[in-house]
Each structure stands twice: as C-alpha cells, then as structure tokens.
Image (cartoon, rainbow, N blue to C red; front, top):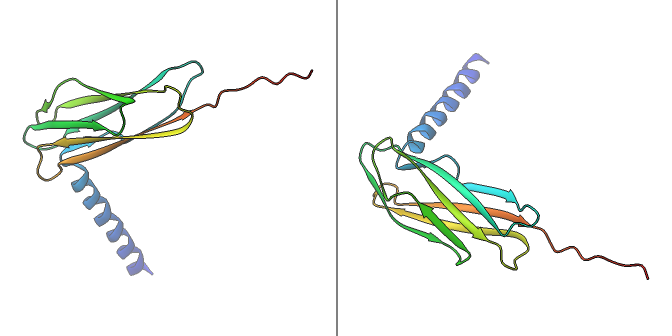
Length: 135
C-alpha cells in the first residue's frame, strides 16, 4: 500500500514539475479566457489580458488579430524584456448582437518555441425585453 502511495505522489510531483516548466516559457498569460455578462445599457465590453515574458530574452509581439471587426485591440508596446509584464486590452463592440458571443484573438510573437497564443472573449448579451400589454 505504501509503494502505491509513493508512486502516486511521484506521478503527481512529476506532472506538476512538467506543467511548471512548460508554463514558464514565452509570454505567460494570467488568463486566456475572459467571460462576462453585459451590463444593461452597455455598448461594449473591455477585456484585459495580463502577461509576462518568462524567457531570458526579449519577445516581440509581431501581430494581434481579432476574429471579427467588432473587436479591437490595444497594446502598450510590442517588445517585452525578460521578466517584463504587459496588458493587452480587447474592446468588443456589441452592435445588434445578442446571446452568447465568442471572439478569439490570435497573438503572434517572434518566440520560435511559443510563436502563438489564442485568447478568448465570451460575453453574454441579453435579448431585448419586449413589454406585453394586457388590453
């Protein structure tokens, strides 16, 4: 029984160690999925995606491509030194859309080991409520 527990602990430790190594490479995002419910009367949703350069060399963001013209992206700068943090802000304009909206943002860098990241923006837009009169 003890051998089984030791194997399980070794397996878990190995899995955690492997995750940490792979997670600490390239631009590491605090979150890659932003979810929100639109506030009544709002016309847009602003999503912030914080990241850090975990490599020991500078990384340049070459391209940021939202999946739709209804989403724009704001980025402070393009090059991030080792250990430097940044924030990418996506602004989704609702227009006449309703229901669950999912937009993706592709981030391309010059990091050969981790050249792309995909961010997801999910916003639940309420349907327009129609008043019903009892006449």
